[in-house]
Image 1 (spheres, rainbow, N blue to C red):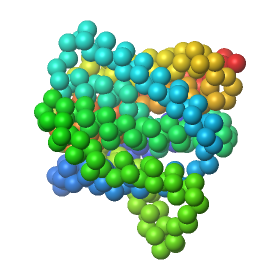
Image 2: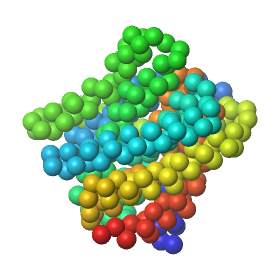
Image 3: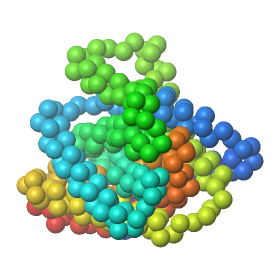
Image 4: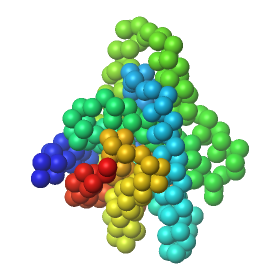
Length: 307
């Protein structure tokens, strides 16, 4: 019950308030969602990723173990989603939208505070979550862009779009500057903090604006399928992968918990930026965030059975 109340008060209600404000602003002022999307892709998201990597303390051993888990988990999840979509006979745009709603998950503003609650501020489990966040930031800006453009653009144009995104460059830059202990002058670090702190609010307002502009042609079966795969199947697969790799203790628990969080806002940002099923993407993010109150609480309870 403690986790249920915490998730409700510290994740669902704050997120819902900002989403609601975004929807209200859209109804009143008819905002330009493309401009909001570009601000997220080219400014706020790169800033928060660089800042977290620059400030983190991650050892090479932990990095390699977590990357191995993440690679196996994502490949298995990808194959599972592909199988389900073939059975459902989805077309091109819906295929990429469904895939993105399952394999891209909220590893930053939802998973990091959740990790610190469950593991009581443990620095080791936080470093694990930061690595997952880094990979979950890189995937939408590489494979995610490829998947929503591959059926309507040539490969050269798609690669040009991927290489134009700052996230591709800030991840190695963040690691390099942290590893070499290169200091950032306060005159630069202060504006970086301002921009990074604006990421969550801007991303949630963008989701609200998208929800406020929708005609709400509900695709209930598709949204339910997405939520089931993201909130129930994914953490079950996480349990299976840590067992298969022989990972135990707090590392195993942190990895499984990282798989249980709802669909990432990046799936909405991709859908809006490249006009790829934005209504479905918005509904999937919003509903998975709400239903995660129950599913994440269940996963937290089951963590105690990991040796």
